[in-house]
Image 1 (tube, protein in one colour):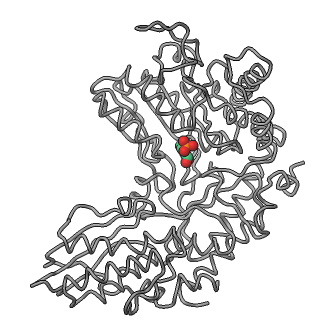
Image 2 (cartoon, helix red, strand yellow):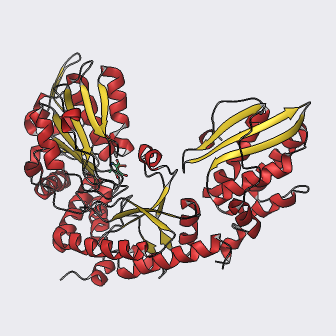
Image 3 (cartoon, helix red, strand yellow):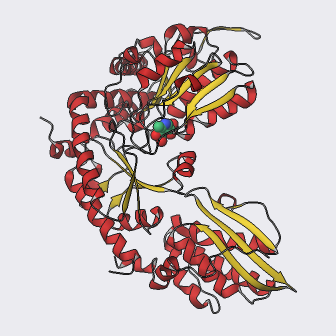
Length: 148
Length: 405
Ligand SMILES: Cc1ncc(COP(=O)(O)O)c(C=O)c1O
């Protein structure tokens, strides 16, 4: 399964098995649902933003390993960041997932760089990020990958 | 003699794909034999004229081939020629009934009876129709084993029921529903009965006179034929009472600026230049199936199905959805801790094509409490080796996703 190691790196499998910040949040300042109608993946994303800083972020839902790992890694990186920093990371992540080009330090997110070679799976990787971006901007209607 | 090795030689895709190609998604669409491809090419390369209106040799040839296909379809399901309407697929067939019969005949408070295991194509047209007519939708539930719960028929079949529409073979569980009994229950309360036969006609003998259904819909591409052609069977006496579905050429007798009269059935329902090549291809697919024998195909699938069920159940991580005693060769399943998408991606890496998703049946997924399943479905060209490969690859996937490879 060597070619697939590009897509399923060990860190992705680890996050899939034990996702981080995988929980509800009672005192969230923003809560948005995301849905990928193509495959049925569902996510609920919680944000707690205070004074322009993301104090807490968590998610619940069901999805494939790519979508779960992407969401899990995202939460570990976004927590503590300012809104502007999170937006910047969203943009750079989006570029990487759709083109494979890495700009700046992507940290652990680099393990997802191989996804762009599997067009059918790009939406799996970006669902949580779009949902987060909408939550940042208080767009609380359902986020779906169909409108991306 | 049914010899799968010889049959596979009829399907050019097996020599074009690599040796390890395993196709287990025939419930979605089937592979095509060279015989069907040749029939479609033959029309385009030798007599590609329009039908019914060309007074020259190849036009007459095209009309004869197109109408000849209608006759083949009619014989295949034991119907009369004038009860066979060419559509673009099951979806259009069902919508035709929803527009041309139901919108005219249903009124507020009438009941449309469906089941909880319908394909989206037999759910949405009725939701739209109910919104417009004020009719009410009712759904017969299914049991845990994927069979319909028909224990309280009086609850479902009432004097308000005007239309009953049911899937013949489930595209998720494989369950073959007791259609003949359901049609009778519908008729006993004065309702018409529609059958979604997309998954049954390709795999077992379906006789519309024996079922006594009023309408029956299926798709060419699920029975070795081309995409873009499907069938609506309708009882002629009902078709006669219906208004046209689409208006245009072909479906008229006389036309003046403000008024027209309709062609005879079935042409009344075939407006415009039809899908000639596809209809001819479907006729060829039926010839091909008849040359092998539908009964032989059915037996081959049942043997493989039982082999697959047993072998998959032996993998501890596998959960199979549906356990009807009468079922077709469709197996929906999940693998513990492996999302169906990841499963399908990893199987694809081994050359194996299965379906992963909600199978156009989101209400079923919701009731099962899953967001998606994997699905393996079989046809005449599948082999025991295909099943062995599937099972090996599932086990490999379990180890891979668990970080144990
Ligand atoms: C049971 C059933 N009904 C209807 C359909 C729709 O058929 P088509 O997409 O060819 O119109 C399908 C195909 O997926 C099906 O499995």
